[in-house]
Length: 263
Image (cartoon, rainbow, N blue to C red; front, side):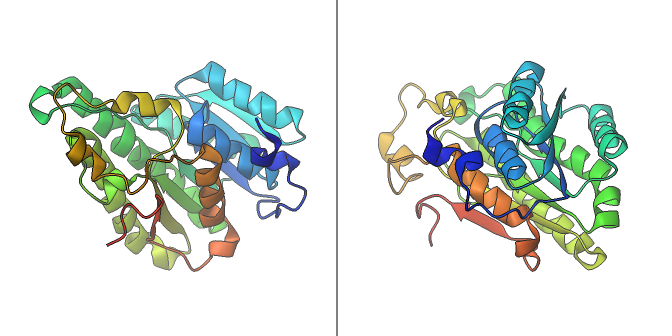
């Protein structure tokens, strides 16, 4: 990783997470890995969870190697019992939970009439149901410590995007869930917010290749600029939203998309 993107190399970085415990899903790669490393660099004890257990372990090892504290676990977020178990494991191992970062996600493009029922259901399961199951398990513990949830949505949760009906459905669901839970639990001392990135230079971008016969004009409506951000850019926003510095931020949907969703 280039030094300017490595949070552990930034000696001016705030330690907003000293004494905090964070559970980060999708931690094996991309935004999940960058977020786990950023929170650890700011002092958090991080539980790195991903269906790719080996990748999650690599993230935890990197954090350990740079002086942070982390553990890793393999989890299928579409399994409600697994979600309950991982939250219980964090609380048992570390004594509590302060921040849940629901970052695991999948995506893909297709003509709506060509989208498979299996992939449609998978996107809803990973991108919406998974965060719901984990939130159900985490909320009682977050209330105890006045913690918070950061959901990773997308510009596809704010606007429509051609050839992404399934993905948009899942991310709109996550945005709606974020707002609903923020209202439900806002008076109980916890915050629930979502970060909505536009194009990010991660492996998932390969799943969004235009389908055959796609209109590039329609696709172009989803991007104000063609440049993509690095996952560390999104991780910085995740770190802010999940920190005590954002104590008055609840039910917010943060776009980080170079202006794509500007009205």
